[in-house]
Image: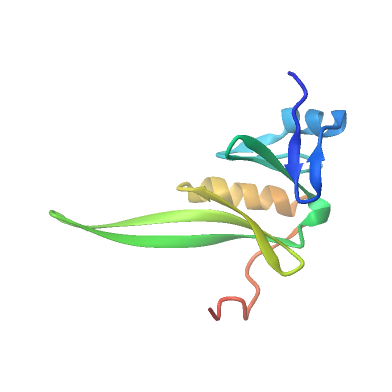
Length: 123
């Protein structure tokens, strides 16, 4: 595969190690999780978040009720969110809870803290 350029918070990365990691990464819906970090598409770019730039990762659940002519329907969306220095900087949407749970478990296996922190949901 041709070398790609990956967009990070600190600029662009295009090393052979990152390219190889991207090619070998496990795919979870819109996320690719490798041994160096997480990759996902953002518009026309491929974003790369190294594990060193993640303080924490968690899943935010968004539930929506829709009223239709024949009744109500509930829709659940799952957003993978990454935190660094107290700021959320990525928000990847999926409709598949089991895939996002598996992705979060894979991220946790690389030493990143995952889950809810009490006091953050006071908005």
